[in-house]
Each structure stands twice: as structure tokens, then as C-alpha cells.
Length: 508
Ligand SMILES: NC(=O)CC[C@H](N)C(=O)O
Image 1 (cartoon, rainbow, N blue to C red):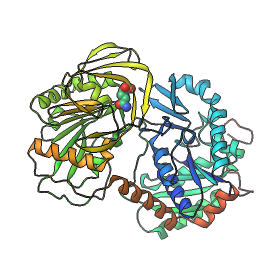
Image 2 (cartoon, protein in one colour; image 1 turned 30 degrees about the vertical axis):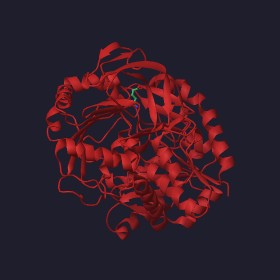
Image 3 (cartoon, rainbow, N blue to C red; image 1 turned 180 degrees about the vertical axis):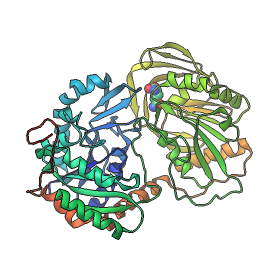
Image 4 (cartoon, rainbow, N blue to C red; image 1 turned 30 degrees about the horizontal axis):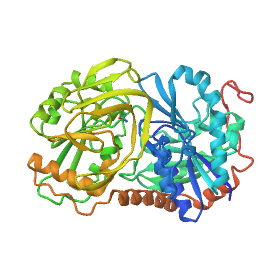
């Protein structure tokens, strides 16, 4: 098999990442050597490969679904927004500069087409099948000319395209129809059909609509995936984060001890790797919520200050909202605070930043004896170490270089009383350490909380990937999907007018 598929979506958040992961897991169970690919990802949730390349966490998760090691080839371009109008461009795992959206779409992006196609070709030469994920919608008519992630890839690599639609939002038929009808005849020739995602209720009620859609477009629906709670693993974030509520709806067991432990995560601007707290949320009896007001820290047993692509901006935000003061007070009272990466930097004495914000000397919260100087080079590593007598694995993605001047050592950062800070991401996924840390927090906050003795975060993640594989196996026409991946889009798919505006063959 030398197969391929592009999973596109009617919208962002239609479920492309999880559908791609589900297809990957299904194929690997069939004995297919499969890899994921996303030409360009916009996300602040990134991961570091073994070679020290930075890629989107979604592709790292999909690689795990494929049971292979993630590499930079799987996500050659990563855009990390630094505000509304500009992003850091990470190319083949390394940052190459900051670009305005206008400059990027005005030329730079198109010049990357060759690079991303080479990466895809290399993966296709190594694997039996490559399941590619698109971005946003393929029918963004303003961006089609310079596209390198949706139809731009499909056309160049001759990939069949499956369009995923989120029926939970409504309007899925119009979205499917419109997505096809706004593409040029050449693009349409690759769009093989649809996949309905997040469906609740009785499929027999949906079926007449799917028949009509087939009549209108000449294209079948390859499956109707039911809505399932808690399947949003390592998704992209764009600039949006879930401010309220838990990290994700989860199926966690009841608490073991008498008390629960309340964790408040400051929803700082440009929050990066908020997946760090997923491991806390997976722990029975730990209640995680994102907060943006000082009074919300009052009943928290642990406050997490997470990473951010804008350390200085996040510091200002903490000050404006009174959170800075509340954090300083907490630290003085010996109540637990954990700063991760950008959060760690903010807890220090000051930052010298001529790189990220270019604001020079900016005072920190001063609760940890740490000074941070931003460097143009990015630290990208996968450290292994020990804390609280337990082995810890992590990963680091930062420009700031910390000079630790005191406190007790803690994962290359430090700890003073109950204030903990480290540049490491992902440490809480190490089960022994997470339990030990939570016991410390429970003692410090006087809670009779007991961590469950056997939560394995890695096993939970595997379970999630298996559930995604099951979803495809049970609710998609896998025979048809297999043919599509193996043989490409069927010939003779009808053209649906009017087609892309301004292209030959379009009537409008
Ligand atoms: N991942 C992070 O939190 C990064 C922190 C900070 N923006 C830096 O680059 O150093």
C-alpha cells in the first residue's frame, strides 16, 4: 500500500485532529505502517521530538496513535501566535523568525510549499500510508491561492480528501455542500466525501439528509461518529482557550481520600502547553479549573501559573487583574504555587527581554530567587531528572534562560517553601512524581486528599487513542475508507457549481 488521505474540515474544531488520530490507530491495528502529517499547524501547544525539533502536540499525539516516534517531518511548519497579527514561524522544528500574518500570507507561506511537499514525499517513501490533516476549512477562498495545508497539498500530492463536519454546531449539510461548491473543478475532483462528527441521537433521522447530500454532490458520507465525552486529547488551541470548567470532560474515577484538591490555573494570555495540567485533571479527586480573577484563588489548594508565549504580557495581565498581588500573598503564606516555563519566569525577580516582547528589564513577582534573560536561540530539549525522590521526564521550549540564585533545586528551577518553579513542561505526566507532588500540596493545604495509587497517565492516553480507533472501526465505512486511502479519489466525481470564484469553470 502506498496510501494517503487528507482529512479536511468544514470549520476549525470540527474534529480533524481526533479523526486523523482515530484513522491512524485503526490502520495501525490492521498492520499498516502509518504516519500522520500536517503541513502547517497554528498552535501554542507544541512538543519536542527526540531530535530536539518543535512540532504541534496534535501531531505528536497522532504519531503515538500510529505507534511511531514523532519527527519534524510530520509537522514541518508550526506557527506560534504572539498576538492577533503575528506569529513565530517554526520550520522543521526550529524557529526562523517572527512574521506578520500579512507578510506570511503575502508570499512567505507559498515559498514553503516545496519544503512541506518534500517532507510529505519522504514520509510516503517510508510509510505504507500517510494520513494528513488539513487546517481550518479548505474553502477559505481568500487563502486558496497560497495554500500549503489543505487543497494545496492534496493537489500536489494527489491525495483524496475527506471533509469532516461538526453536526453538534448545526448547519452541517450547508457546510458540506458549500465547502465543495466553493472549490475549483480540479480541487473538487479530489473531494471524495464527508464524515459527520459529534452526532447525538438517532442516525436513522440523519440518513435522509445524507442521501440528499449525496444527490446534491455525488459524494457519499463515509461515517457518522457519535459525540463522545472526553476525546479532546492534545488538540490545537489557536488563540482560544477554555477559560471556565475543567480541562476537558473526563471519565475519572471517584476520589480516594476524604477531601478533593482544588487546582486553579491562571488563564494567562498566549497560554502555551496548557496540556500540562491534563495530568492533574486525570487524577481522581483533583478539580482543575482555569481562572482569571484574584478571588478565584481564595479556595484553591494549588495555583498553577502556566507557560505563555508572552511572558511580559502575561505579567502585565496578572498585575492588571490583581492576580499578581494574590500570588505574592499566597507565596508568603506558604500556600502552594507552581510556575511552569513562562509561569516560572514570572515568579522570578526580573526578566531581561530583548527577544520576545523587546521590553528590556521588567520586574517579576519576586517570589523565587531567579533572574531570566531572553536569548534569540530557543532551548528545545527533553530533560530527564528527579524530584521528590521520583524520576521525572519533561520537555523544554523557551527563549528565556534562568539564572537560579537560591532556593532548593527543583527540575532545573527551584523551590522556596511551597512556591515551585521549573522551565520543564510535562513533568506532571510522570506518575510517581505527580503523586508525590500532590501529597505535598495536600499536606501544605491541610487537605485529607489521597492520590490514587495507580493512575497511569500514559495508559489513559493509550486508552483515549484506542477509543478513537474504535470510533472509526465502529462508525465509519472502513472498507470504503481503505479503498480511498489505497486508490485515491474515485474518477468521475461530479462538479458542483459555482466553483471557486474567479477560476475558470466558475459561474460566479
Ligand atoms: N513555553 C513557554 O512557556 C515559553 C516561555 C517564554 N515565552 C520563553 O520563550 O522563554
